[in-house]
Image: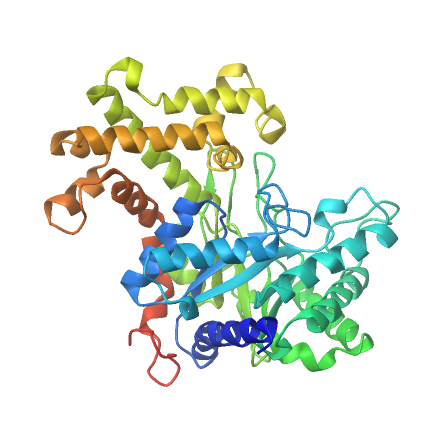
Length: 450
């Protein structure tokens, strides 16, 4: 049997879980799905563990700058990231058919300094690589101007470029009918907002309708109109975002008209970006108001960093100085040695930059965590605490939620388990708000708890 075709059929089965969520939402049930946007193995392990515990599907997405046909900043191509996700799912006991893979901000983002005739062929190759590797949720994002473009870009230009990407994906996918697409241009730049935000305006309903109309026309003109029922989501701004120190919480009263833009689209929901740090009630309100796909990324590595530094503080109390991981010092040396990863985001005095490097909501530390020196320090930290053991009083001091779960017998008092559980604290509000494990029986695919 052709391996690529066999993998494509397997991915089609995975997509059934995503389809079940969408169908149930359009049928009037307040259900949705979180999209885990991270390439960090510990975050991915926590997401798989959460999905296994919930009996729900998990959606994992890579962004165009993380993973591309040249390796992105992670060094991974789409097939590499797919294999990593599936390996971690297997290690955590989550069946592969409960995992859906997506590509976020797929387009010419990485090549904005190049003209259209150079950047768009690269963007088409990018989308082909994702589609050929079996990703079944593709966000087509051509909102960024390229060298020589008149700005601002019109809806028609953005949509025509997105249509080129859709045609490329349809030709490369092992099973095109299994692929769903996300369109929409009112999104933060990949990785989140660059600066302090003073005000945030939800997308005007007329702008959202114009985006839909332009993309429909462009897809028809490209001969790809038959794919329209597989446009699963429209990205619009519901008024949620975060900067270094502040979170903009969802206010349903500001989106009352916008909520109805997709009433006449039988297959599409809204997708919300930058939902990190929203309160559980805000996430639930977003799902109720038809943002059925909730993207989260920096908030997960933020929680990972909290867990790592808490464990490092425990290590300081238990391990002789010469044997410690010195994790925070290692992170600081790595980040100071490579300021291009964070300096343009963090303004201010050296002390203000130091605080931002360690604690900012935007969490630019995540770009440095895969550095081998940091990974070695993390390994040493976990090994030191495995050997020393974590006394319950120290656990109570530094990881109080995990302390309670250990006391109740819900969580083993082991460093890696404690760390993953801290990341799951950032995922639990999404599990409750999306209620993907509570799909109605007629919509739930096999393997999802009813």
